[in-house]
Image (cartoon, rainbow, N blue to C red; front, side, top):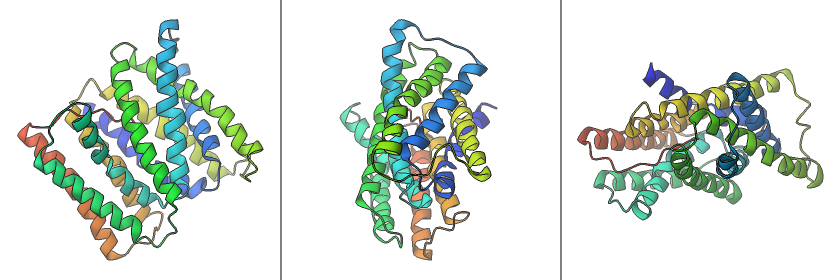
Length: 297
């Protein structure tokens, strides 16, 4: 059961990019981020009421801003401009950034297999982005890279905060505080920036269903399952399961979403997935994994 619960988060997160591309591609990133975060936090608060102590509020505000306000905004800004499979391609290179953190922050020497896997991931992702038939803007790639960097940084802070703050309280209030901080940005982009976005309160039935999925399935349930699993399974298992998020995104993009890829490009995606999984399985088998940061998508 603990493995099933741990798998829920990454699998549900993997549907995020396809959902955004299919139903919200022309929305304001800030508005969609606010819609995803704030109702999800309120839902968790209703399920299990919890109030933060005054001393915990500054920590929750910082984590909420980094993990929710900043990360959600950057992720959606990228996902709305890129084919969903390419977002998965970008996210599967997350271990490369994690490797840099391991070297610079934890002062650990990566293994040869980790370095080799990182080189393969970088080479393959560069090829897939440069050879894409879609119009790839520089800003969308920069948004994605920034989102991954923020993800790593926010995960380090969250891991430290979990030693002092109850996990449910931390999860609930980072979503609420992060969602509240998104509101002024969403209002500015929606009504004052001069850009023309659809009314975020005028939803078709399919958009309403997709938004409910983003709020409940992709956020409340997935975050709850993931954070619940952190103390119950090993860090290597968490890292391995987290790989399923971008893998599912790539599969959905290339199949359900109909993203246009050649046989060569699909083969390279398979190489990326195989390289990532092989590196993690090899390190886990030898029990020589370097310390990893916990990733909270």
